[in-house]
Each structure stands twice: as structure tokens, then as C-alpha cells.
Length: 575
Image (cartoon, rainbow, N blue to C red; front, top):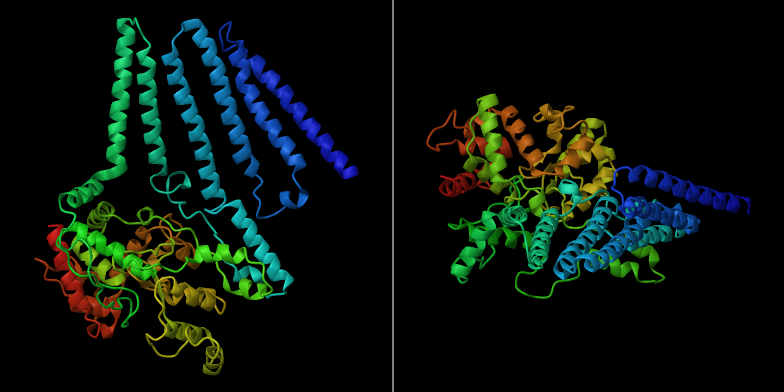
């Protein structure tokens, strides 16, 4: 009871302090307004005060277990209920002001224009604040889904499972953290575009009710319309871009264009090591539309999405939701098996586009006097990772090498006997010699990586090849050791190396440059075999490059032939 009274008195003190502060701010603001505008001077602090008082009251009445829960964010009510109340207050005040303005000016068009803009701003504010909360604080899932994850973990503890937190995946970060305000790509641009649209429409409506207008006002109106017209046209150009317009133009011109969709799926070949597994090269296309289609087709195949129109099985995320809603006696099996899949990221947010590649290559030429052409780099990208460095869930493409994991553990001090005993329960992640038998490809490789991390987190990361160029993690100790440092685009630790592999393809590219400038074959850096400094007219030494990059087994997988073919394709595109 004493604790309850203390909390109640604290609430009263906070409310009183808010009221007093509001009065002080109101008197201060009066000096900045003309006589007759005192109501406006008091309106601003009053709205803020109402929001603060509301937050104080709901914090007091919130249940203690909810307030202290790790999975219930303390800013939830401020972001949702408080924002809605503020928006509604803004609209109500605008309506009252509009009525008073109509009684004075009798101009219904000006009032409609004002209300259109104010209502849109209220909607904009609610959506924007919700988006910031949803992605930056809740990491892309709802409060209800966080509660279900928490409940599943409680079930695991009640069933006395060993460390249930490790058996249930949950989002660890905002999947769009690299984007503006941490929102999905295009969100901010879209909101700005709609704001410009509503602003222009509101201005148009408001101008309809003007019967008499002086030249100065007319000039101001012309400038306002020109501003909205220019801004909106710029927004359209920026939002859609010339590549999207070109894509749709080609589709509208001939929707049945031959080669616009892949009719068959070639056999995938492994590019990361001398094996089959993750998709490698793609067939040559003469037009960019067909190339785009093939990229989407390959991505769908990688994630098991049907391309024939057949009904696909529920996604892991849907399965998670369904499983959480099932109240069965087999709860132990549920907690052991279900996983949360991170919300899918838009690939464009992590892609290293051609313009960025060209800028990086020009900078490399100026600073290191090393000249690499864009077609050469894109050829390596195609052969190594089919042109994409990330999976749909935002994680970097990886391939886990169990034979390398064995060697690294042995180098660390494990005996053959210890490794063989460990192998009995980890046959697919720990083996002495290389084999393609245990490759899963795509997301499945992360299951192998996570199990390996339970044995040794650092060496598990070292035993996987990462990203756009499939550089093995162990190279942090030698061939890309120069990538370790305090600078923003470098890695302070191996943990940061893993984290940044998921963020953007630029880190994959920087690792690639460091690798080919350091790794040597017969005393010659790999970069020399594909640079313009040592070669002319495209006569690159693809065989030596493939040997140094992929090992002596490159001939079995025809790496050199595939690299040359990919180069010839991109040379035609970028000539």
C-alpha cells in the first residue's frame, strides 16, 4: 500500500509540474505573438502538456509486469496513443479555426484547402511515427508477435529446456537500418511525393475562392504553383528512375518478347568451392529485361518459391504464427523446432550498383594505380554469387565448409580423436576432406553455421565463404588482414566482420579488392591477371586467376571458361 501511495503522489507531482511549466511557457510565448493571438500562444504548450499528462497517467495505470517486460517497449503508448491524440487535437483545432475563418472571410475554398492539408499532415504524422516505431524499435514485427515469442520462451523454461532462448530466433536489428530513418526503401520518397501532391491540390482548391487578387498575390501564387510542379516532377523522376521506366517501356512495346522470361532452368553449378550447391552462372541475355527476369527467377528458385503457378507451402514466418497459436501438449517439440525468420529486406537497400562500382574502380585507379574494368568485376560477381550478395531475408549469402572447420579446429589444438568424437553428432558440419554432400545452399547454410557456432563461434565464421565474392572468413587472418582497423568501412573484430557482411555489398567488394591485391599465384598478385595494367584488349589470364581464386580444382568446374564467357557478355553491355 505504501508503494502504491508513493507512485500515486509521484504521478500528481508530475502532473502539477507539467501544468506549471505549461503556464510559464504560455506567458513566455505571448511576447512573440500580436495582440488578439493569445489563443494561439496558449494552444501550442497546451497540446504538448496534454500529451505529457496522458503519458504520465497511462504509465501509472500500466500493469507492473507489463511495464517491466523486456518485450513491451516503454515508448509504445507514446508512439501510438499519444501520437493519435496529438493528431486528432491538431485536426479539431484546425476545424475550429476554419469555422472562425469562414465567419470572417466567407471563403469555403480556402477552408477546404486548409483542412485537406492539415488532415493529410495528421495522417502522415501517424503513419511516420508508427513506421519509425515498428522498424527501429520493434525490428519489423508487431507487439503481439513479440509477446508470442516471449510466451514461447516461457513455455520452454517451464518445460525445463536447456537455454530455450537459443532455440527460438527473434529479430536482432532493424532489417532496414541502412535506409533513411530506418524505413523500407521508397517509404520516405513516397511520403514526400504524397505531401507534395496534397500541397499542390490544397493550393489549387484554396485559389478557387479568390475573386479579387492584387498583382503581388498573383505573382506569389504563380511561384507557389511552379514550386509544387517542379518538386513533384523531380520526385517522380527520383522515385521511379529511368531504369524502371525503361523496363515498363519494353514490356508495353512487346509483352510477348522472346526471352523475356526464362523457359527452363539450367543445372546450377557451384562457384564458391570446387563443388555444386549455390547457384553460379546464368545464361547470356542480349536485353536487360530478360536479364532482370532471370535474376528474379533464380532468386525465387533459391528460396523454393514455385515458378509454375503451383501452390507453395506456408512460409516459415506463417508457420511460426500458426505454431504459436496452437495450444498442444507437444509444446516441447514446438519450442524446439519453430524459428522466427527475419522480415525480408528489399534487395535494393544492400546492392552495390554500377555507379558505385564505377566510382570505386576510378578511386582505385587514382590511389593504387590499379585499373580494373566494370565488365571484369561483374563477371566475377556473376560466377561467384549469381550477381546477388544477400538472401531475401537480408543475410549475406554463405557456404559453410566443414572440411575447413575441421582443419581450423585441429590447428587450434584439438586432436584427431576429439574431432572424430565431435563428428559423430555433427557429420554435416565437421569432416576431414572436402565433399559437396552436405551443402544445403541459401538459408539452409545458416542452420549449419549456427550449429558450428555452438562449437566455436569464431572458427565457424572463418569456415564460411561470404557475400558477393564468396571470400572465406579465415582470410581475415591473412589475405584480407588489411581490412581490420578502426575506420568506418573496416572491421574491428571478426564479430563486426560477420555483422557488416549482412549490411551492404560494398563490404564484400572491399574484401574482394584486398583479397586479389594480397593473394598471389606463383609470386604474382591475382589482380595482375585481370587488370588493365597487365593486359590489353580483354586478353586476361582467366585460368591463373581462377586457379588462385578458387584453387587447383578450377578446371573441373570450368571457372576460367565461365569467367571469360561472363566477361564477354558484360563487355557488350558496358562497351
